[in-house]
Image (cartoon, rainbow, N blue to C red; front, side, top):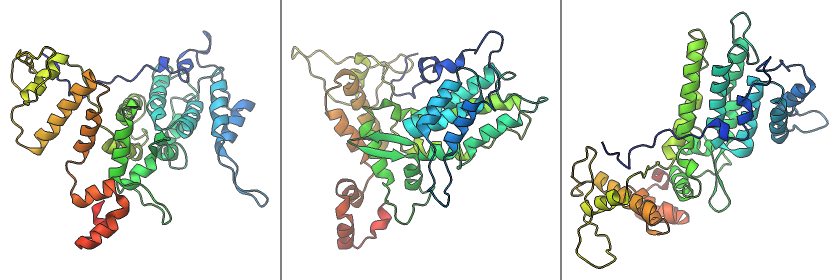
Length: 367
């Protein structure tokens, strides 16, 4: 059976062993003690937790935020001597703050790998079969005061030319979170366009949220096998954040078909391909899912039109990657469902209020 080049891409997340920040975590500390000693009362461990806590406001000084660069450095240093879920969590928090949302998926996968490989040896170790200390660490993924708050603050996009988008911006745009009175945040359409414009330079934008969902599901499955019913932390708030990011992220398109397959698809649409010799040789026939013929046929609906644009863009991106037409078509595709005033908001947001006033329409209804 032939594969469809527009089927969802399989999970192609790189191995943790290819991540220089995480690969050392997958190696035993020593042959005698795979996870090393518990360093909870070690000076370096205490310095790590203090750096992550920041400093509260006092009578003589303002509050200081956590020193995330120090946290990252100390966590990596301490890992040379121990394998500890608390340290892994603080490393994840630091990377979210310093490197962005894309570090969430590998961080969650690291949790699952450590728990799967060394359930009995990983610190903090279960006491008489009770893993409450580990559950407390994992509960930070459900707390806005700790790791979940770092996820919310993390940057999904950080590009000098296009701009920055945080998970929090996305939640506000989706209506899941209220903006502050003095806060101006991008609309959902603006966020979608920014991400779509950036995905060519940052392909991870299309996969980072689905990868995090898959990693979270694997972590929950691991915990469900080892913890008593009801002891698995509630990660629903984290999952809601991930769903919001997925909702605005560019859709990944797998382009695994041959040039003949894609050219045949365009031929099915009645889009002629240039011939080097100017001859009349027919365009190659496209193979269907079951190996037979058959094309897309006539475009009879908006959905057909959107899919046709997908086909054209996929062909251009695979065979003519420098052709700017694909970018223009993708932009047109995103606008296909917009009305006139929404297009004004897209291309001239400063003019929306005036145009809406002239037409007698409430501009706030154009989100």
